[in-house]
Image (cartoon, rainbow, N blue to C red; front, side, top):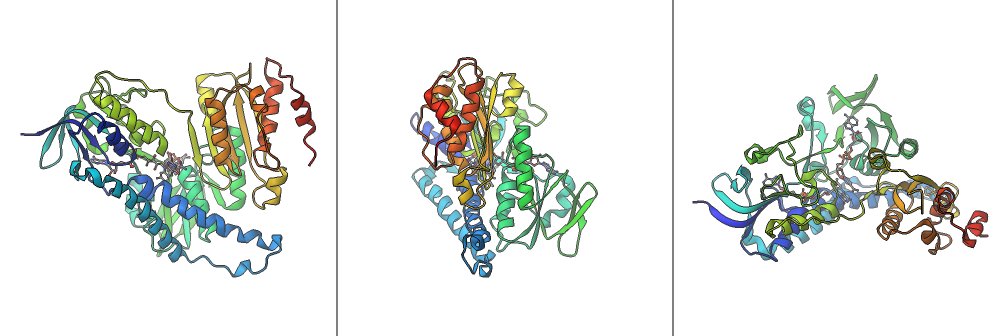
Length: 472
Ligand SMILES: Cc1cc2nc3c(=O)[nH]c(=O)nc-3n(C[C@H](O)[C@H](O)[C@H](O)COP(=O)(O)OP(=O)(O)OC[C@H]3O[C@@H](n4cnc5c(N)ncnc54)[C@H](O)[C@@H]3O)c2cc1C
Ligand SMILES: NC(=O)c1ccc[n+]([C@@H]2O[C@H](COP(=O)([O-])OP(=O)(O)OC[C@H]3O[C@@H](n4cnc5c(N)ncnc54)[C@H](O)[C@@H]3O)[C@@H](O)[C@H]2O)c1
C-alpha cells in the first residue's frame, strides 16, 4: 500500500525549500523528494561559487591599471589557479553546507529518491509509490549538451562540473554569451586563461535592446576574444578539441558550455498527467497560480522557465506551497522583473525589457544614459564605459523598463526597479536627490531626455539647472 501525504514536493532546491516553508504552516503531513546533491543549485554550482570566482578575477584585473595609477610591481603578481579554485570551493561548501544545516530540522521528511508521475496524485519512487493530495514540481533546470557533442564530453565542462576543476585550463572556448558565458568567460579571461567566446547573437548577458546589445558586445569584444557565429566542435586534438564558427578554427584545452539550460522535466513521466505538453515537453500551466491545467500539480522555480533567477524561484515556492494547501487557487501579483548579470560592467534589465515592450506593442519614449564621460567613472580606470536605455510611458513619464550595462549597474537596476514599483512619474524622480559625484548621476541625462519627450509638460527649475549641469 502506498503512503498518503497532503503535499509532495519534488526537488529540494530554492523553490522546493521555500515551498516547504509555506507548506509546513498548513500541514505536517508532507514529503520532500530529491535524489541529487543537496544544498541548492544556487549555493553549489550557481550564483554563489560564480560570484566568488568573479570577485577574485575583478580584483586581480585592477593590476592592469596600477601602472597608470603610479603603482609599480603589478606585473609580478600571478594568480595561483589551484588556490583560487580551492577557495571558491571552500566558500561554496560554506554556503551549501548552510542550506543543508537549515534542512536538519525536517530531514525526517526528506526522501532521497527520484520521482516519476504515475498519475496526478501518485509518484513512483522506484521501490515505493506515494500518493499526495497536491504535488509541487520544483526540479530546477540542467545544463544541456546536444547529442552531436556527446562524443567530446570528456573535454566539455558545464557549470555542474566547472567548480570542481582543481585548476584552470590554459585555453578555453566558451560557447554562448548569455549570463553564464559573460560572467565566467570574463572571469577566466581576467585570471589569465586564453579564452575564445563564441556567441550566436550580437548581445551579452541577455540584453534585448539592439542598440545596447551591440554596444555591450563591442565593449566586451575589446577586452577579450569574442567571435560572432554558431559554435561548433570539429574534432579532437591530442590535448583537447578543435572548435570553430563559420570558417574560423581554434584548438582549445576545454569547452565551457554556456548555451542555455533545460527545465528538469525530462525524467518525470509527465505524459501520465494526461495534459497537453508543448514541443519542449512543458505542460500548460497558469503563471499566476503555477497550477498545471486544473490538476493538483504545480510548477515552481527554474523548471517552469518563466524567470530562471533565484528570487523568482523563491517566490514561486511560496506561491506553489500556498496553493498546494489552499482550497481555492490564489493568484499572486509578481514583483517588478529584475535580472542582473555580474559582468564588469554589470548588465541588468529592470521592469519590461525592450523585447517585452515590442512584443506587447506598448508605446514608450526612451532616455539614454552614458558613463563614458562621467567624471567619477573616468577617475576609476576601467569604469568609464556603459550605457543605459530607459523606457517610459509617453504621458507622465512613468518608468516601464530599463536595460543597462553600467558600473555599479547592480545597484542602479535596483533603484530603477524601486522607482517602477512605486509608479513614480518622471517629475517625482527628478525631485529625488542625486549626490555628486556618483555613477547614478548619469541616469539624470536619461530622465531629462524623457522629461522633454512626454506629453504632460514638466516645468521645474531643477530641469534648467540640470540642463546646465552642476558646477563641479
Ligand atoms: C552558473 C550559474 C550562476 C547563477 N547565478 C545567479 C545569480 O547570480 N543570481 C540569480 O538570481 N540566479 C542565478 N542563477 C540561477 C539560479 O541558480 C536558479 O534560478 C535557482 O537556483 C533555481 O532554483 P530551483 O529551486 O528552481 O532549482 P534547483 O536549486 O536546481 O533545485 C532543483 C532540485 O530538484 C532536484 N531534482 C531534479 N529532478 C528530480 C527528480 N526527478 N526527482 C527528485 N529530485 C529531482 C535536484 O536534485 C535539485 O536539488 C545562476 C545559475 C547558474 C547555473
Ligand atoms: N547573474 C545571474 O542571474 C545568472 C548568472 C548565470 C546564470 N544565470 C541563469 O542561468 C541560466 C542559463 O544561463 P546561460 O548563460 O547558460 O543561458 P542563456 O540562455 O542566458 O544564454 C545562452 C546564450 O548562448 C547562445 N547560444 C546557444 N547556442 C549557441 C551556439 N551553438 N553557439 C553560440 N552561441 C549559442 C544563445 O544565443 C544565448 O545568447 C539563465 O537563464 C540565467 O537565468 C543567471
